[in-house]
Image 1 (tube, rainbow, N blue to C red):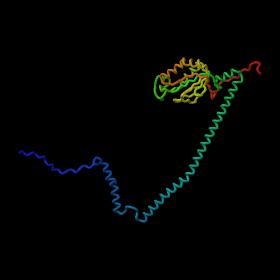
Image 2: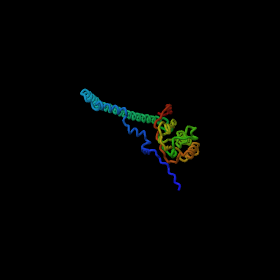
Image 3: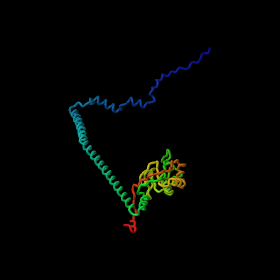
Image 4: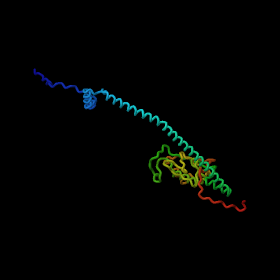
Length: 300
């Protein structure tokens, strides 16, 4: 029989098993040699010389004690100064709070004085408008917005589109708008001008009476009426023939513009006829030109 070939014996010595942390040699080195070799040698020399640990000579002990006393003195003085400065800082803080509170009270008092003087001026203006001319004075006061007005009319509520944002672009962007579903100041200007042209006798937006000198502007995304910001939804009240006024506005170019805003940009609006609407007087009136009415002949 032919003998089967035997595999050659491996005569090399067995290699030691690999360490589990062989792949983390750097971390292993750091853990095994946590103390730098230079520090270890210096510590060994000090132990051999007998200089390790606390000083043994009297002079060295006195020096160490003096250093500790000096450090304790510095810490004590710092704490004492901080304790002495605390009442001073608290006093200055209270004085500053008192000054702010006095300034606030003074500002509140000035605002009350301004409001009182504004009311006094408005009363005098209304009285001056009513004296000469009889009904003509009342008509001038009504047209100027100096008096409260009430009567039949319409209520138009306009609101931004649902989920509208403050970024985007579209056809309105070329005219200073953004295609965002938000009502803009020029949108409101067109709506108000359409109401005037349709026969409105008086108009207000969110309780702000409009006059011939009123300005509708924008500050960011907010609409300002005479520098007072408005918050949607915008309630526009107009006094006039409730049947004819609503129909005339819807058929006007500005009414069609509002319809385009509703269909194309999601602007929400509702228009309803009202038996009576109340519009307040304008909060502030500026008289730029005034002349005394000529007294009629025979009038005492």
